[in-house]
Length: 213
Ligand SMILES: [Zn+2]
Ligand SMILES: [Zn+2]
Image (cartoon, rainbow, N blue to C red):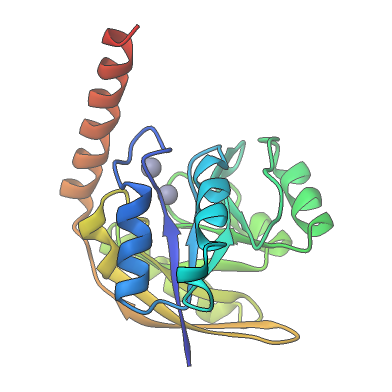
């Protein structure tokens, strides 16, 4: 069985402070086979991590799955298993571009600020049935949505923005002709505390960059 840690934000997201060396250290120490980095609207950490993992010391230890969290007109989506950054924010174009790159399109926390979810799921490969930063109520609805749609991939996501949030979720993964994913850990991080913390990081980093000018 291989493990997958899904939906990780690094310090390259405006609301996250997880340092790239800290993340790589965590992944290697905990023997995570695959980890998917999904910063908000940028691919910088994916590029850096890809480069770092080419070093001899990391050979065969773990695999990076490159992803990006994009806020479209219908809500957040995560193209993953992609090669190049996707810059558009239009849902239809994200679908097209993900297919072109032979990636998978996932809807994170499908009941947090999404519109037309019934329409969206027809165009994606999977959904998060658990998100450690979402409300229990929203996760319950996501699980029900997953149960009604057996063909969708179902993923448990950490949605981590800090180092101590990385232990909240885990999946097993099988990468063959098709990708199979099965959630094996679904902890609740605590919606209000986590979201307040992410907002505080965002405000702090914005102020810091203003004063640095
Ligand atoms: Zn965020
Ligand atoms: Zn996220």
